[in-house]
Image (cartoon, rainbow, N blue to C red; front, side, top):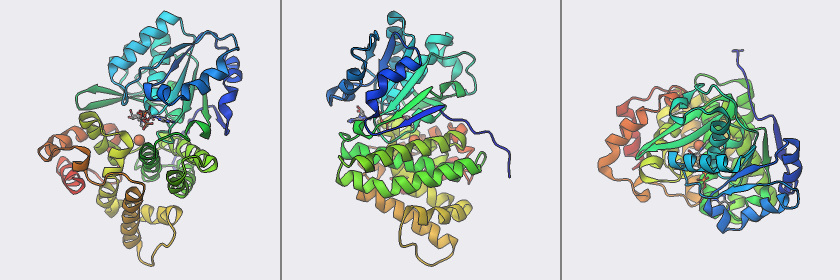
Length: 384
Ligand SMILES: NC(=O)c1ccc[n+]([C@@H]2O[C@H](COP(=O)([O-])OP(=O)(O)OC[C@H]3O[C@@H](n4cnc5c(N)ncnc54)[C@H](O)[C@@H]3O)[C@@H](O)[C@H]2O)c1
Ligand SMILES: [Fe+2]
């Protein structure tokens, strides 16, 4: 067995209705003046009230930053940091999808450590400590509540990640009651994102390990069985909790066996065209997997029966091809766009997108098959 180190969030609360315990969790972490980090969409649908209801009457003097922009740009982090400083925050609660949780992670870090954001992009460049941090996902999703990563939009078509074990929060709280109001299109996009995390972790070429494999398999079992049910009935609490838990398991898997070319090629679509993160992953997923299958068919054939019933007889290559087709069909069935052009991508941008994707070396090195700029262009053409 290859050597590996496995890290994760130290406390995970998986409980329908668990948000009611937020006061207790804050008091365990000795919060007195927390900053809540969220986005305007969460406020609009009335979700913020579920959090503040658990804090009001506890004596906590909390402040609210409700202006997180999706795929948070540097400016979001900076204005949130300024508010945290003004408030004298002694803890941070990230409440929302990956965008709010990632912003919360960085603010908790930058406030305590006094480092500059531009100095800490990349892997293990963080030197300081962070403030106590609670992350509460409202999408099932990114798994950010159990990853050591925070992603920032750094330019018109570029995203950068800060990767450091300091970014694991103290507590992750998974409560399906917070996800019942997710619009079907967000449920679909974030659910497919979580599936991609598990698939890419399972085939990660460098840090794949027995722990991450086990988590990825369980994650895929939960996500693939529950995605259609939550699209059909968004109020199905049990299926919603299974999705949240599945996304969390997938997050734990890829935090330790990182994602690869699907994410590397998806990032430029998010940064340049503001295609939601999960949708951009879904657009690339079948095409990157078909490209990878010469090197990963055995692993895709292993995952096929975990995700789908009715695996046909055939060799690994045939089952792997069937797996890619089934994933494409699932993405169609849950209502996601199937072609990049439907998401606003321009044909004459494919070359520059391919060049941007090549900058994601941190991710591409985990891919089971080497991707050149020519390969990236061809994959974008197939997805266009
Ligand atoms: N840190 C990590 O490990 C990691 C992993 C993958 C992706 N990401 C990042 O996460 C971000 C994407 O996160 P996301 O896909 O969760 O979306 P998001 O946080 O950008 O939210 C998308 C939209 O959904 C709305 N929303 C969220 N929860 C809702 C709910 N319960 N009801 C109604 N509306 C709701 C939000 O208001 C927002 O408008 C990207 O920036 C991506 O790069 C981070
Ligand atoms: Fe992702």
